[in-house]
Image 1 (cartoon, rainbow, N blue to C red):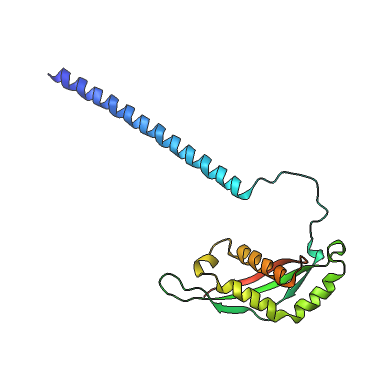
Image 2 (image 1 turned 135 degrees about the vertical axis):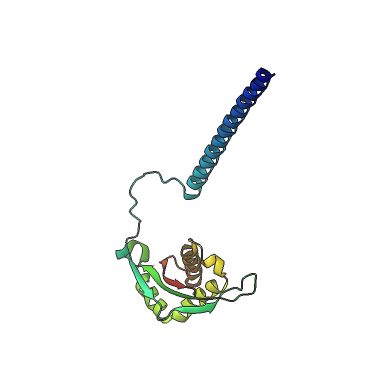
Length: 174
């Protein structure tokens, strides 16, 4: 009778070991599948940049004149789900290209127009900022998103592609 119990115990141990090894193999397979999925989705989002010829139309900092706002823009943000109100302060510069092949002498006129029209620039930036929530502006991509949206609206308002950059200097949300 003792011998029969030892065989049952030995069989149970073998079955338990096989079960544990099987679970470990399955777990390793799941981890590998998740890692491959994450890596492929990151590459798809960022896009793979293939080396190519050097483009002559790439702007350098020397090709851009930045026009700063005289004061930061301060406004209320969209209230969160709980009704909590937050404020944000935004300071930015608008970049205009003055490279000869892009501007055709329109850059000097646009720069003086932008300097005279700071109220329009402030209004556009204020409208974009007022549409945001605290959560949206807390993300890593917040400054790039704001910059892109303000740039698009400025280009539409001034009907020009000479406005090439909106540089977010400071975004503060107490």
